[in-house]
Every structure is written in C-alpha cells, then in structure tokens.
Length: 371
Image (cartoon, rainbow, N blue to C red):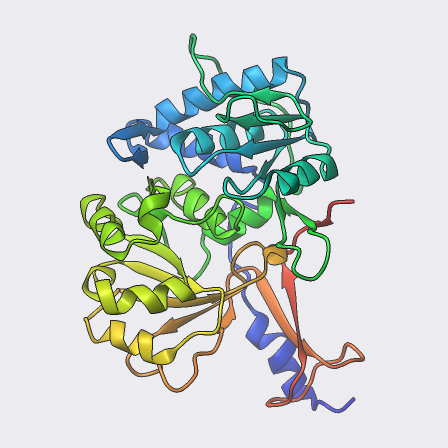
C-alpha cells in the first residue's frame, strides 16, 4: 500500500462525499406526472409558434402510450424514434416510457444503414417516425395522435429499469447500445449540485436526439417544472439565429459543445452572458474563450462539464469564474451521487499528483451495453 491512510481517506471518502437526496425510486414518467399535478397550466414545450402546457403534454403522451400498448409494445421492449427535435419527439419519448418500454433515439441525419443496424441490434418492437414509407425492417407508427383523453397506463415500473438506449459513435469499433436507467436520469437533473433548474427556467433543446446531452435538455426542465425551448436544425449552427431564439424564447439555460462554444462566443458573447446557466463540454477547451465570455459580465454560472454516455451525460463539473480560468480548465469534481477514482493498473488509488486512469461510480453508471 503506497498511499498513506489519511491520503487514502481523502481520495476515496472525503472527495467522494457526494450523496444527496433525490427521487431514486421513481421513474421518469412518474416524476413528470407528479410535476404535472403541481403545475398543470405551466408551459412545458415551446417550438416556434407552438406551445404545450404540462397537462396537454401529459394527455398527448397518454394517448400515444395506449396506441403503443395496442400495437403490442410491452414492458421491457425497445421502441425507436426517428424524429427531428420537436414536440412530437418529446411526446413519443414520454409515451414510450409510460408504456413500460425504453426509447432508442436514432439520429435523423444518420445514414439508413446505421438506422437499420441499430433497429436490428436492439430488436426494436416499433419505430415512431414522421418519415413516410421509411425502408426499415420494423413496424412504423406515425407520431400524430387524436381522440379522447386517456388516463396514464399506470404500469408497474422500477427506477432501475432501462429508460433509454443511447448508441455510441462506434469510433472504436461497432456501435454499442448503452442501457441507461430511470434512476440515473433523476440523479442527473434533480438536486444535482451544479444547476438547479426551477419553475422559471427555460432550457434550450439543441442537441441531436441521439446525443446524450439531450437527456439533460429535455428531462432537466420537465422534471423540475421548467420549459423546453426547442431549437430547430437551421438555428443550431447559426450564431445570430441562435441568439434570436435565446432572446425571444427567454432561454435561461443552455448546453453547447466546446467546438460551437469556441465559435459562437466571439459572435454572440453578450447574449450568452445573459443566461443563468451555460454548460459547455465534449472536447478540449480553450480557457481564453471562457475568459472572453466572462468579460461580458455573465452568465450567472459558466460550467465546464465532462462525462461519457456510460455514466449518463455529466459525471463532473467545474464552475468557471474570472479568478479560476487559468491556462487550463479542469473537468472538476463529481456531481451529486457520483464517485470518481484515479486508479493504477492494479486497481489501487494513485497518490496525489500522480497519473491514473479515471473510474466513475455512483447512480449515473449505466446497466451495461446491450447484448
């Protein structure tokens, strides 16, 4: 044992004392239904000139959930979605969870071959899409709904069951489906220690539905009473267009990849500075870009994030300020209910300042890879 007792205690216990209360026994859709009871008339979704209140979103999802069940979807099934960021997509994901299944989001811009491969790999029971006559080997259900209001299916479900399957890029071989639980999502967005989303927050939904940042962007507001502001594809890569959506949509929270952050700050820094939360991560950062944004006097919280899909979006965060934006930004400390260890090749903690491999534990760790 090379690490002294006091240092070992610091590395394993003190720095990993991240336990915080959160609803670890409830499923995503149950938490959403509880929020709907509290704020039925609050705005849940905004897409251009359309908006849905919590009660309206719940009703739409209930109707689609019953259609899914009639179509043969059962607890534990996988249901894929091939939809752009939209009200329809969020209704579909919520309905799939209400039907007891897990959603598998496909990249709307991805090649048909990858779509077909994922549908086969997860043995998808059904595909929800608005693409007519999609040439894929699975039954298709359009996302449109109509008819009388229906109650929630109220199926038995457990927080440790799979909520969604997110496929890795496949850059190191064949893509792998990551099985993420309901509990892991609750830990990401509720009492999480880095961004307290509340009733007055309006969170931009900018990420590709097949990229796990979308988990924070959708469920962060919807499980805390806020609103999702859906950003269409044309505005995600357009700095001025995005600034207009942030201003007109009264957006208070935004996640952006590092590459876009580096590109957009020089163009629309003052707009970003008005946000409550600006989260950034995914690639090597440039501290000088962070400092340039801070000179505009905001945002309230500028957060550098890190985390692989396998640990549910974010594992660590670092709040950047004028006094700590030096030559290099760390990835920070573990968020609530998350643990970090730097270990050597024998699985033992390395001493302070030594190089080790990062191991991530806690409630955000996925169940594993599908198949």
